[in-house]
Image (tube, rainbow, N blue to C red; front, side, top):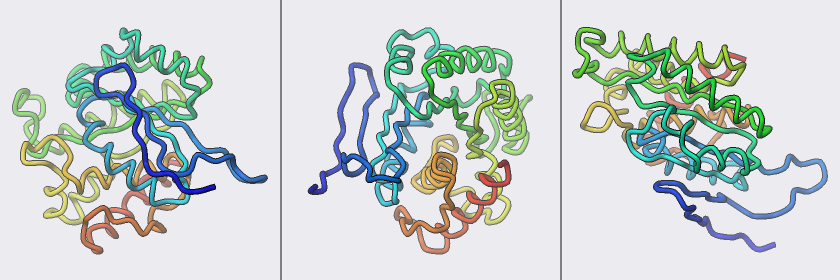
Length: 254
């Protein structure tokens, strides 16, 4: 069967689309069927979308189908109350549904985050999919809007990591340790660690997006991202360090 180009199908929802990143073919006998994955979040999900698509397209799992629902600034509570999101989960026949809350909410309002996370997890369980929590990162210089609570990156990251880990444990779900890997990069190479951010000190740069894509690759396929040739426009040294730390933190939880 001839190879098909990457395609994007817009669905009837702002910032939501599905893409198949490779051949649309029936697996040969003995092969795993292609996975269907839904990402539910906001701009932190939109910011990694391109990198996730490109990395998986360049991997042995290029037939994976990816769908994204990521309107800016929205919380998991919003998605739980949104008919379009809930019906997409219920009817999509996904293998994984990835949940990402607004960047401050799990740190400032952990109970609000957890309540919405548990509610969405129930919908996901009923659909037959597996919940994956997209653990995000602290802001580069702390949360300036809540400087007394989180005066620096480390304090914010610590609380975010705990909130996401608690939610994953409560829901018996999978944790994609993007935030913990982000923290490890900052400790190992401070220059690269700061370069994971866009200029706003919040959203992911292409390097931050590459880091997230490596973590999700390990999470979804249980395969070592160090074996991937795709470097996403980074230098060989940058990509190597990110892949090593993504592998370390993803598989240390298994």
